Length: 77
Image 1 (cartoon, rainbow, N blue to C red):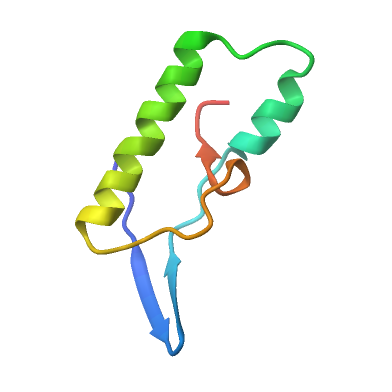
Image 2: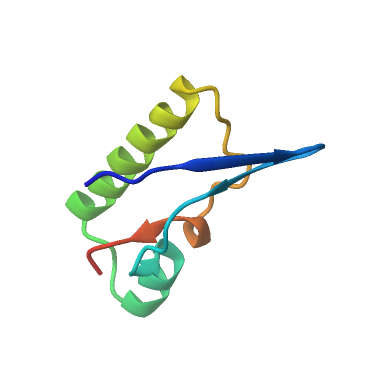
């Protein structure tokens, strides 16, 4: 799957805009699964996906300053 990032800069901030992605946030996923515990394989998969996404952003000189479960889209849930 490929998503195109479009950046806009108006001093003093930079904003990245993407197309609308259907799915919920990781935060919503966590809230909906309570009181069950997250499966270790799923947790590792989330961690690897997030790490790969951050590496991609960082390799292009982009620093995400507000990384949290509410900012992560889960496409499969």
